[in-house]
Image (cartoon, rainbow, N blue to C red; front, side, top):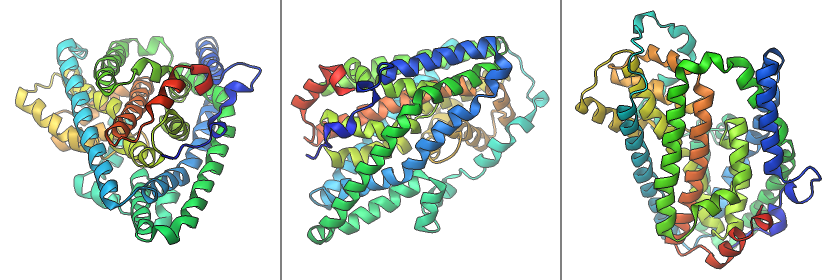
Length: 433
């Protein structure tokens, strides 16, 4: 097992006189909420702070994902090992994301947040969601499969399409594994390149509190608190179901796998707060890869499972998709039989895997699902626009926690997890932060 040097993983929390990074981010979020409430017009103008931070992070994603996938595959023993790890990861992703879909559908059926709204779908303004429905037209199954294949290797990196980058990285890594001895210098150079890219990410993370402040201020200033009251119940229920999923499902998986979910959450608290502040799971991919390697997961397993998890293990998005679809049906008085809901579940099992690399992925995927069903009015998506960012926070947080748990579980299945190291790291949160 190869683990990156601890100094590479160190964050600003050790050196900053302002305190640990997670505390800085939390202060930034609270200040953003305050500015959004008391100075809404000025707060709305702070959006570039959050957007700029996320863009800086996204700038590093393509080379980091490519490098981690290639190095991970090239350092594995043989092609059988690559296939075994990939198969285990995909099986885990499908089972857990299906559980999250079922939980979301069950919760929205029991709670019925849309009941009594009596919205006439014909009166809804579909222009507001036209950009999302246009994107959704390109998310059919055949189009999704073909979209995984880039027109050129360069296009995958320019567009930042995660699935395309993963595909090219897998093929490149498999090619290098055919002549492992001769390819070793190139693999070592790529590994050194990854160290440099993670160093870039470390510098960018200094700006995380500012990014969280700007993003949160914009959200509150733009939409306001009072204007969201009619939909706050739905938003609160999405958050509640997400919390139950993390505590019960992921907590249960962690318990049976032999590690503490609470300790893991404490270990990645900075990344969780950054995700809450920016509403972007992409913003913390690189730091999480480093932390999981430092925790004791073998570098090859992290290099394969973590990027794939961002594409195929969106548990939080799955919860939102199930709840959002049924909520719109309830709000527009669209009757759905048990058979209809089973069909929705089956469709969501496919469409929820096709959103990687698409801006506003969850919302676009929901639009694609409704458009393919021809039962629930697509125009009903307008109802969710006002709380899109608030629900996006919940699903982004669940997504990153789910990907971390998945990586540890697969590493344990492969006997590629250093339990002794993990005990030391998780038992001393200050050292591991």
